[in-house]
Structure formats: C-alpha cells, structure tokens
Length: 432
Ligand code: ADP
Image 1 (cartoon, rainbow, N blue to C red):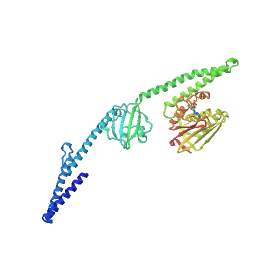
Image 2: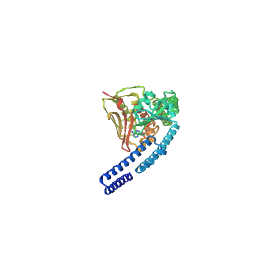
Image 3: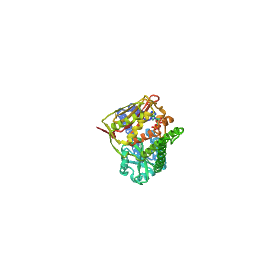
Image 4: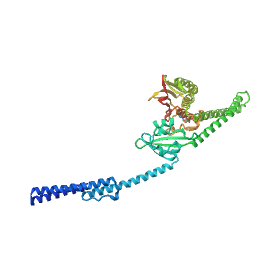
C-alpha cells in the first residue's frame, strides 16, 4: 500500500515538474494542456486496469490473472497471493470437514447437527436409522416435524447439556434409545442418540434376578425366624447354655429379613419411573407420624424436634415418602450418640419444598459424602451393622427422591453432625 502511494506521489510530482519545465520553455497554457493530458492518461491507465480487475473478478481463475502495470502490478500480486492462501485454506477446511464427517459416520451412535431453530444441518447413518431421518430429504427441515414423539419434543425444547433421556424407539418398539443434546458453537446443538436396548435388557435381568432371589429367600427365612421365636418362647425347649446362641441366631435372621425387604424395595423402585400412588400429601401430618416413630426408636436417648410449615404440601407417594423420610431420621438416630439432638424441618426455600434432618451426631468425612448413596457403601461397617443398618437406606432414599424429581443434599462436619436435605421441585408444591 505504502508502495502504491509513493508511486502515485512520484508520478504526480514528475508530471508537475515536466509541466514547470514546459511553462519555463513555452507558456502557462501549453504547461496546463500538458498537465491535463498527463492526468487524463494517468486516469485512463487506472480505468483500464480497474476494468481488467472487474472482468477477472467475475471469473476468478488464478491462471488467467492479469499482471498489471505500474501501481496495478502490486495490486494484482497481492490479490494473487491472497487468493492462493484462501484457496489453500478452503481445501484444508473441506478436507477437515470430510474427515470429521467420515469419523462421525463411523460412530456407532447417531449424531445430528441442529441449528438454532432445531433444523437438521447434517446427520450420520446411525441417526438416520435410529431416528427415522433421511439426510437427503430432511436436510434443513425442523427435526420436530420429523420426530413426532412428545417426550423427545419436550426434551428438545428445554434440555441442553443435562442428563440424557431414555425413550422407546418410535421406529422399532423393542429398541430403547438414549438421547442427549449438547450445545456447541453459537446456539447450535449436537443431538446424540444411542441404542441402549442391550444394556436395558441386562439391567432388567439383573433387577429380576435380585427380586426373584429376594422373594425365594423371604419364605425360608420367615420359617426359620418363626421356629427360632417359638423355640425361644417355649419353656425348657432351649437349654440355658444355648440361649445366647439362640439370641444371636434370631438377630441375624431379622437382619437378613431387613436386608431382603430393602433389596425388594430397591428393585421395585428401579422397575418404574413414577410412583403408582401419587396424590396430594399432607406432609406435616406424615412428619408427625415419623416423629412419634422416631421417638420410640430413640427410646429417650435423643432430643427430637419437628418444625413443619403446616401450609406446605406436595404431590407425592405417601408410602414412598414415609420410607425416605423415615430412613433419614432413622439414620440420624443411629449415628447420633446418646444425649444428642435431631431436628426435622419442613419448609419452602427458593420455591422448592425442603425436608431437612439435622443431627449433632458423628458427622461424615468429606471424602465419603459423594458415595453414601451407593448400595452397601458404609463409612463405618461395624457401626452400621451394630445399629441394624443394611447399607441400602440412602440408595432407597435417592431412588424415591428421583422418582419425585427431587434430590438429596448432604452436608456434614466430622465429629459435629450432619444435615440431610430432601429437596422437591416447585412443580410438586401445593400450598394451602
Ligand atoms: P446404613 O444402613 O449402613 O445406615 P445407609 O445407606 O442408610 O446405610 O447409609 C450409608 C452410610 O452413610 C452409613 O453406613 C453411615 O456410615 C452414613 N450415614 C448415613 N446417615 C448418617 C448420619 N446421619 N450421620 C453419620 N453418618 C451417616
């Protein structure tokens, strides 16, 4: 650019200089005519190359690029280099895009690129098969016109970057799909669909197996427990020297019975997404029942108090919430030494309904907290056993809460106590 300006500058200076010489040698009129002719030629030269540039621009072939003269030499050279660089990066980009498409096509999962209006920009073969799309016909079509599944449409409307959803395929009823939306770029979305029928089948088998084993064990255990109880109650049936062993056998059978009951509860909870008996639930009344039950479990060893908002109720399953809240309070009693206190709260917070159990018990070290809801995860195995724990209580609580779209929040300070909160969404609240 600098070069061009200098060239133009020197040309005008030279022309002026020549005109001055002409003026000195002749007269002012001849000098002015010389200057006008010079400027006209200069303009004609520029117009000529501008027309050449325009003509080339309509058909931008690098091999047919004019060479230019004067200042235009630089202009054409710059355009030539820029165009070459542009062509090179275009080739690189398109080969990168080709590589991406090949890689995405080879994925076993379905991938659909959606724009900000949920129109299909591209999809791979598995997506065509799983979602019933056709790239050729459906490109630029809104995906909601093509996939007429209400759950899918709801998910697409609201859920980007959250947990995937499971759906029965609308193409083949024996296929279960997991669908996830991931945001990328400016408002674009990546829809990933995965065939999880096999995983679901195995999960189903595992649940059935646990449920069946638990059922099969329940009857013989009831018989053994019954006989042990009868024999203990019969005068002289058990020699004094064996009474101790009989007590241990009874404790162990009732522990096994509790375990089986919890396993059955868990497999029942896992088998359905929603509770069958959901209705408007008078939570304060339920909490009063739990307060009485917990007082009898504590047997006067703790101070237990309840502070419940009488006007706050939710839509929930009474049986399931009794079990979840009972579990949390039961744990607080079991893991709080004698003399400690347990406080139950029920109130609204940030438009959510929250049940909290606060104890002044043993507390839990931070590294255990994330794992507490895993099956059979215990911080202190022997204490859990001594106090009649099965290691399944918090798993049950977590399942029940997730069936109510709720969540469990745990905070604890080792040696000082813990707070367990069951939080329910606004959509479940019915305020009186
Ligand atoms: P468990 O039957 O062993 O109590 P849970 O699933 O109910 O099983 O609880 C898992 C573990 O979490 C317990 O073993 C215990 O270590 C810990 N825990 C649960 N509640 C409390 C509490 N209120 N205070 C201290 N630890 C707790």
